[in-house]
Length: 121
Image (cartoon, rainbow, N blue to C red; front, side):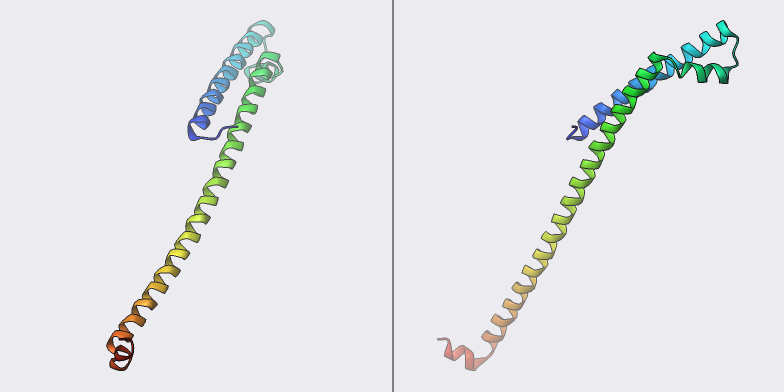
């Protein structure tokens, strides 16, 4: 499981390697089929996709892509969780600021009222 962006980048690089290898296999077998069997490029490409070496590369690519997608999904969930936590923290900070402001007003009222000031001495 890829946990960091670096791991995801490594998986993406691996996927690119598999993709390039699959393309090379496909092109190689396509050319061979065109030359040996006299097939058109389209038919040769269809037949080349049936080759085991191409299928192996394509399956490996699919596996890596699924790992990348899973890692991105996990990352997205983590980011959403952090955003939710940030939102909660901001609301608590706002609530605290509101309470502090009310306390300041209360202290100011108490300090300005001479009756209350004399009673507190």
